Length: 150
Image 1 (cartoon, rainbow, N blue to C red):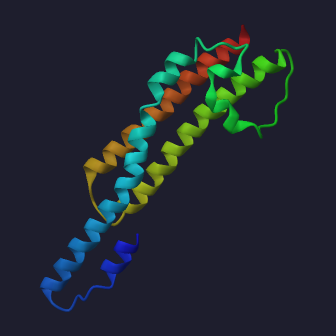
Image 2 (image 1 turned 30 degrees about the vertical axis):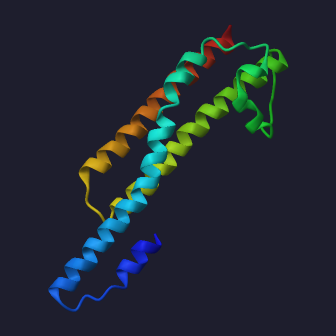
Image 3 (image 1 turned 135 degrees about the horizontal axis):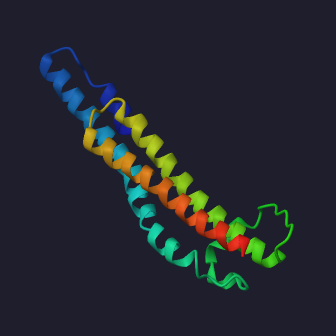
């Protein structure tokens, strides 16, 4: 965003300066948008492996899910399932929700920057990734919920 702030300080006394200033602001906004859009693209690639993993990962071992170690601070309440199985399933759910949240947060940054840069293509691409994220999250959490019932 420092590029955008620098562009905002450019002179705007002549029509040429106004056009140059606007072009610099647009370029800075596009650069600022590319970081969260790139993040969304990379994170979106994780959905297919998670969908494959959700119904088959081994419930008796945490080694199937390396992501588990990142969520050790989660407080657990266990009712009917074996404590270790419950932990693994909850950690998996937390990981899925964190992925969805990261994509939603990146989308929010894109949309904030698009307020000053009208680009329907970027807006649609960002919204589509969020829609896919919500759909994938629901599908994966449904698989895990079914496993919890069994």
